Image 1 (cartoon, rainbow, N blue to C red):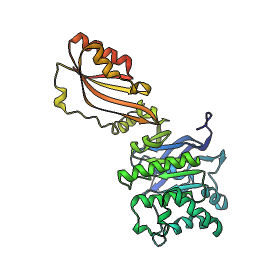
Image 2 (cartoon, rainbow, N blue to C red):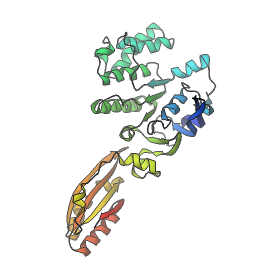
Image 3 (tube, one colour):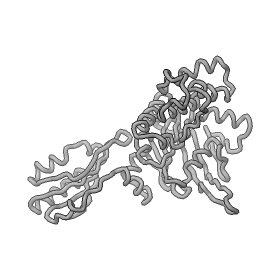
Image 4 (cartoon, one colour):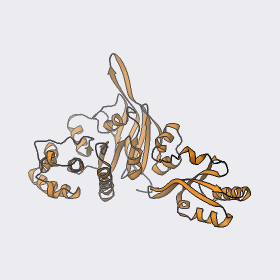
Length: 342
């Protein structure tokens, strides 16, 4: 990403209201957000948060009730007809349930997107093999959707979205219909496409793990509003809102059986590592320096946006003064230390 980020997508005071049983239901409430050129931007929230509606507003599949959408600095909110068609040719979209034409084979599904955009037969014959190779489906060109796995179907969806050389890629829950292995493979592919082609990518998901794996920045939606937005590392390591804290906590499964926390003779701590300190030998230094016993009950260190972050649940056992000194040392060497028991 550039040192001075350039907004390629700007949502300004967007609201979307639907009529429902004689009442107006507001799905998106006065949302403003900038998405930078070349980044992978995530929008996360639970069902009904408004994230899909916001995503669909970007290419006007859902026209905002209020506010405006700008693409490359141009207000496209009222675009219609030919100008809207041209706009959508530059914005590829990947759907949750693949949305393939089952009577057409893989090649024909991708070619259909180019035909709809008015591309020539010559252009189509050149481009379709290129995108099929990009997504790893060159050998499946003549296969029909019924013969494909879920991961392969989504790869066709990605190839179709890329067929017209878009500069924006919108992904509506692209992995929610896939198993873990295919989810990881599709996320890896989307990241490679972003890095290789520089396509600005917007992903919505209800799964924080999806956002954590590939996004540069993320907006958290709740009840139609963006309640928090920052780079992914900051949101995961230091969430500001209670709702965000709840979402993040589910990605770190650190439950410890209560029986392990009942021993009042030991000090139980939650130790949080962040940044470069997560890669230092802090625990072994603590044992060596203070002559205590240290037991790791639970924990993990992972990489978010290529930066390490870790949480450990540990117990310190030894002479009280040495345990206290060890705890103080840990507070100096790590991001945060929280006493759980003892």
